[in-house]
Image 1: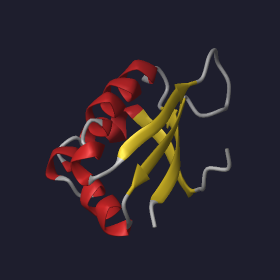
Image 2: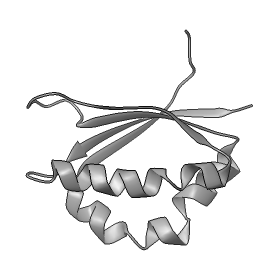
Image 3: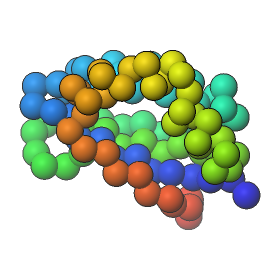
Length: 96
């Protein structure tokens, strides 16, 4: 069964563009782990809502772990720490 995730991302103060650049880079790795980015949207304007919301599909938990521990992604951990204030990962299923 396919694993479907909703990823909510909040940027650190002043790091909206850095967060998006980081996500551009790491999301490019998803297909190499058998997955796909179904949707990626960005908040308009200021507020407390996440800056980005993504829906990602991966074949299974093993593919998710392989993506999360991909050495290229891990090498960017310092960028993530600087740009991303908060991340929430929610397992979801598409209804429509």
